[in-house]
Image 1 (cartoon, rainbow, N blue to C red):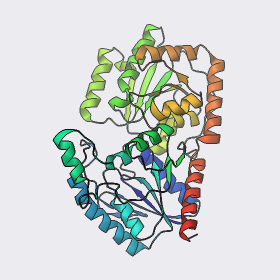
Image 2 (image 1 turned 60 degrees about the horizontal axis):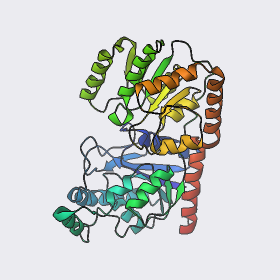
Image 3 (image 1 turned 90 degrees about the horizontal axis):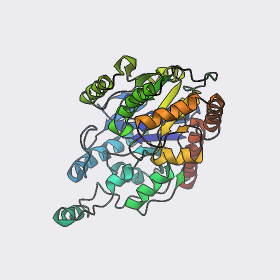
Image 4 (image 1 turned 60 degrees about the vertical axis):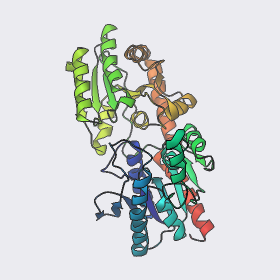
Length: 396
């Protein structure tokens, strides 16, 4: 198939797992012989099948708002950019729309104009950004007036959505509450790239374990709890070390965390790697004894704990949202009852005392990745949906 991928960000522009998944999907589709081009935001350059010609209504890092006027402006730009691409590069058999957050929905209207069927992946709540306003008072009335044509280019109005792949049931429920007409679609957990993340031989957690916190350092990920866990383990007589592998959301937040490590008296046992290149991240996982997955928000699913499992590493987690949904259904990690240093420390200490449980959790995690959390399986579902869209259109 000749495919077009539409996404708001694409590596090396990365906020989190969504962008990494987009690149994994593109690479896997190409390895299967599909012709794939990518349209995303950026500097206007076109390199190796990736055209960074779309425009965001507001850059990431700034506060998200309804941005009606901004979306009207980017609607004109992005519609023109997508039309130019389709006319110059040819009409694809189908399009995979991975995220339109801060891009607006106008690209979908252009795809319809060119009779290009599309599949939406919904890995977070991005469709909610284009739902009708329902706020109270004068502001709400003004918003609802602006949501009517001809000012509604920022809205789902007159945009058909037929094929949706949701990351989790809780993500689907969140989106369909705000946009009730969205189809129930298919719920499919995303997959780990096993070409990058392969298992090491099993090893027991030692008496002085190496802990790992992988992912963006952001308050919603509770990195300060990882530091508190280190201090709590000391109170239990366990001297551990902690590695952070991920970029901070801001320089001041990194300073805040560093000061927190000093205040807790654990700074000497903390290592800050910053952003680790993807092709080196598996080695970081495999060199650790316990990977921490912490959350203060209902994350759609999360990726780092799955990558750790694929590397054969025990995970101690306090999950919410889609991650909780998955780990409730598949008990393959050690769970803490609270997102606090003492609770996480106790979960680690309990796991350390039970090597049989350690080995079982690692084996169960590897089996889950192989059977249900592989990139191959995720792309199989995408290819099936895209192929179905092509057949209904009359393509191949």
